[in-house]
Image 1 (cartoon, one colour):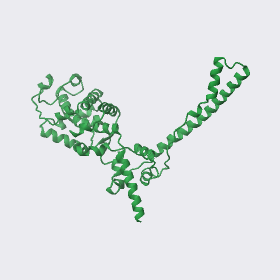
Image 2 (cartoon, helix red, strand yellow; image 1 turned 45 degrees about the vertical axis):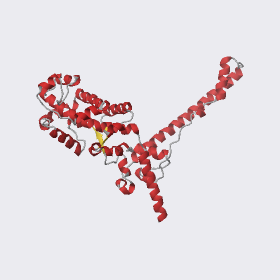
Image 3 (cartoon, one colour; image 1 turned 180 degrees about the vertical axis):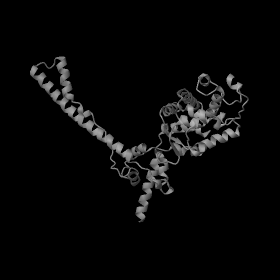
Image 4 (cartoon, helix red, strand yellow; image 1 turned 45 degrees about the horizontal axis):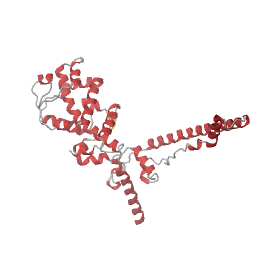
Length: 345
């Protein structure tokens, strides 16, 4: 698969995946159209968020570019300045204090004079540092103001503007936002209109005997089940570490030969392998949920989980790669186009 060649440093991608699974909601995941077509992966991997866009603009001195000013709502954009802390060093005073300690300066008047100089310098530094803290707070507030002023402008999604807005996650049509991954697996929340459709087609194609309407009420009751959420979290990370094995599973023929298969461990072409985590879940008492329905839920959710893990890996890869070159190229193309248009006029 083309997808696996784009993962880069897999250990780092897995670390990011863990962080994504630990937050309440994942900010961004690709839409199903992106995941279904490997030719579109590069589009998603080149997306940036509005904070990264502002950083790109600052680093490349593009804050005065019209599109950037428009997107950030004409907020006064200024470059951040690094604080120079070397000015707080006074080599002469430090050297004199060392001489006092070594006994090289021993006259009381000289020692007191050096102590007073050091104390005065220390007091001046404290005032200066306090002023810099105030300035730093102001700069932080200014940055937050810039972020808050960001807005999506629909016209920047058009070809005329090289679809710039579609490369910004906050605005992009290629992105699902604020995703509760656990509830997506349970199907108590929707990802996008195509995700369920894709999973349902797969289940029908391979004749998986799962009637969602029969288990829907149980899935809803499991929304707050931390044990099952942790089991699914662990399973997603397994998918990340060995993605080909799991994605091969959703393209192979499966069969359903009776519940007894799943009490004993899955062999050959069966629907689910009962690892220790799944067995513990089956043993755990949950009100109104018997072992038969638990097994159906595990089968139903496992396939949804495998599909969803591909979305999560793609987002983790995007965050890891932090590729800003495409967005920068688009902004520069827009600048060049505007200059040519200005000359023609």
